[in-house]
Image (tube, rainbow, N blue to C red):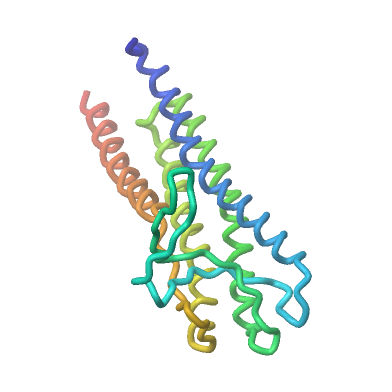
Length: 211
């Protein structure tokens, strides 16, 4: 049954948008914390106490491996893995660790701000509609904070990858830079929408003045 009330439709869509924006990034944060905590508490002697996550590509990607299943062996080729590596202390860089930690902490703090901004934007849209300066202001906060969050998280992964890929050669694997998150695309779409909304609001205000 179609929803005939426009305001109710906007509220429902705004709620769905809030869920889709907040849940994935919160899941990634919780997953990362749990993985890091469990790895840090592992009994690994003479290794860096703070394991680092990397994306790795097997050098022998042409070889097909097999796994058993209820329908028999299944062939597969392993192209990329996300691994948490315990690096020898004498081969770790404190500068890289500090920079990566700072960017990660900044990303987490900004993520909290981003989540709060999402809920504020949804409440503003529900109360005042999308064609308002307050909604435009909140949309800009969401879009730019989201973009900055993903930039910081990407830097916290790329900097260790750049450094250790030049100093460590793992047997059978090669370091790979993290793939670009779809969050970048969504953030730029929101920035584009905010600029379109800004033009629409200005045209509406000019039209109201002429009337």
